[in-house]
Image (cartoon, rainbow, N blue to C red):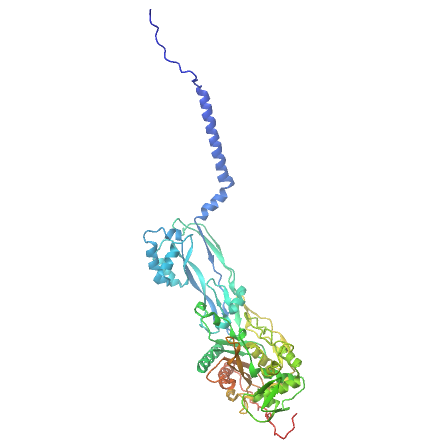
Length: 595
């Protein structure tokens, strides 16, 4: 039987598709992918194109601040006290520096350390830190920055800044103040007038390469800075220097903790000098103790002692209760409210005129005069002369002092306040009291600002100071003559006399409050006076804090007054008046009745 040929096995279930259908499927998938990518491209380039463009560009743009030139501070004659000079901040992009292999960050730090005066370890931490910006040094000179750039270190660059410079060193530092590392005012007038002096910073944006190098043909935009305005002060640089030198010498000679000198024009309130010791270098305030960075003339308070007796006398004269020749029977001691009061020097029974009480600085005489004035009236004159409130100078950190109210005065204060113990004042307030007397009884708000210097160099004068009558012109004139007696041989301050000039003034030797024990320890010695006495042009106040080599105001403060006042009179070309001083009696015979 013949065999049938074998057939290949049939695979069931496999069905071959048509080529046209496969082609259509592939085409549809391709079209879908093209559409998706097309839509995404439209979104990137069309809808979000500007966003992505900015993000890409930002990676290669570097923006820097263009500092505004800070306004100058000058003295009354235009001498520069504070200005701004070109400087550089040395900066780094750590993302570039830490990837460098030649030189390595360690080598870079070692090369930079001697130039910048910063430890290599500190620089290394900044070179390899996070982010894309860090300061290596701030405010270096352009010469130092040039040496740094000459090293050609990866990621290291410099930025122009302005650094505050004080050409006269520590002269007037307590008044001028200082700025911080960013150029913002932090003390004194630099702080008080920061908004005026600072101006408005500008900006520069440049395009850089991947290594941080500025592209010469890259995009650059600049917003120029707006300079600050300047200040012209009433200070006189030469008088300030003399006051500073004289004060520093006497602080050293007496072993005092410090001191203050104020020189001013009584008729205008202009302050020509305001010197303090110890002081500081305003270019390097971080090197000084925080306690010396203020202005003691307005911030530090003390019990004035006998310089405040003039207010007791003013109250008596202005009220018509006493006259310069009224006689007061001054016993060796005086018992009041359970306390025994005495004068600085022991004495027997004395009959002093009111002038004599002031000239010889009798505590007992001041108490007896105040009893005729009355407590409430005395308080009213203390306030009228400006005690217990800021002087109006507008200086940051100024203290109002402490005088309380008659209702708050203790039994002893009722009798100590008339001779200047039991109240607290600052030096500016004391100077203001005597300036009021020298100005015929009219109080003029003191000022340090002559005007604002506009960006075009034009001086815009400050507003006239406020004037307030405190006592009558007649009472002020009587006080001037009484104060002149203080500088006679019979007074407490013959050392304040200046040959050829009539000088009026008052000593102060007050017990000093020691905050460490809340007790009296040491003294505050002072002298305040004006000249010529019959035509007052200038006033000088001297305060010494806790002198140990002598402590009487007439012995340690009056000589400084004489030196500074003599210099100021010559500088201002103020001649003697050539008149004859009055001869007011200080004592009367013991058998004359008390007036």
